[in-house]
Image 1 (cartoon, rainbow, N blue to C red):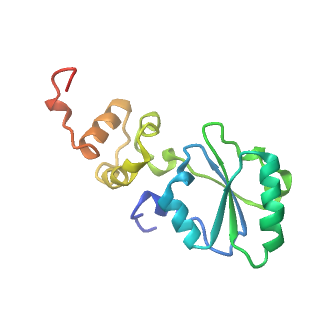
Image 2: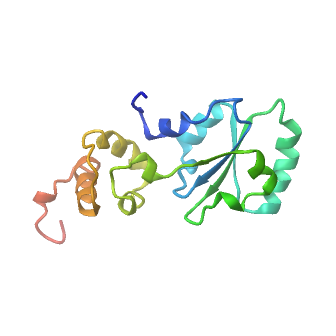
Length: 164
């Protein structure tokens, strides 16, 4: 398996156009709200919809997707947020869709999850590159030090006062 260039590639590699016409994604960390990822999936021929309201979703699905299933884009239904649970989707989708789960813990397996989930999404590219430096599993404090040093370029040894 080749090394991923960005954290997005670890997600994009799992989506092949016209293989699974319907993909169901559990996204507890809201990764599928990131603009570049959405744009790259759209460029590959995927249509994304976030499942929030069952009635609104059913209307969209029946009027836009089921009708154009043969000729239209592949559909990705995303269930996002910390209460994300793919089982809340309608049964007809669950029985036919390809189920996937994506999280920061999967993309950054050696970093402490509660720490990295607090990082703003704009820093994920730098963090992904930096994690290639240290393949060892890190605890909470080591992850914080690692992020300060490699993402924000702050050396913790130089901090001596609370203001700093």
